[in-house]
Length: 338
Image 1 (cartoon, helix red, strand yellow):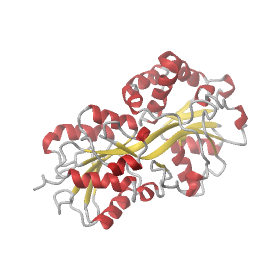
Image 2 (cartoon, one colour):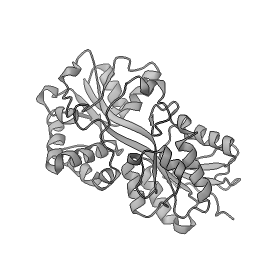
Image 3 (tube, one colour):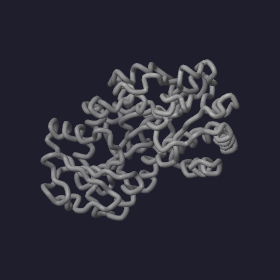
């Protein structure tokens, strides 16, 4: 007998139900997914149900709210699967003992070792790159530092020309955490302060950064690649170009969306089946329309993501993203970030 399905939605949480699957006390589904990743998950879970017969309820919220809810619910939590963006969030969930280690040859074959936990507690499922975009009418890409593009944006030639993201998501803090790992804390501080010295304009989301570059009010931005791909797939931002950062150095910063089976799940077999499906048969559905890169090397990226061409990735280190995230945020705040 499964524990009760999701019975209430707190003010912090937004629930959505698949057609035919119980949520808020209606017909109970086989799996309960707590997800901080949106991006068309309704259609993905519906396809999983159609192919496997395993029904899914899901609960959307920001990552911190989901982790707090799982901790508060404890052994009575209905959550079977925790899904989120950012490898640092997955690492933190593992550190808190929320996730169960899996023994899955399917997942180990489908997900490269760099994109999953060594102990099998979480697996990356889709990948994004945080890189540079620019206005080709105002910027010659030859002016970017090809060896260390993120640091190169501290050069005074970029003063008054930069736009970047605020601290509402982990996108900026994970990038800076990776710079701490590469350059040490003082080196990363100098980079962040260099961006500020160049009068960087900080914006509330990546789309605003893209729109500013498209409008010519900013000349250079840093965004996740798939936001630009989405805009361009809709016929927008046609005047914005993407530049793969640091291709002659450490590579472009990357991160993953991923998931793990909750330690207290009372349906771990089906929960593991969901992760295996998402990493194999469901990979194309997961990235379809969102333009993230598949983690499974046997799956091709969609046309919009592939159009940006191959690139060298910076080594993804979930422990760095997770353990240095708070320090990265402090560096940004100290430099005047909002």
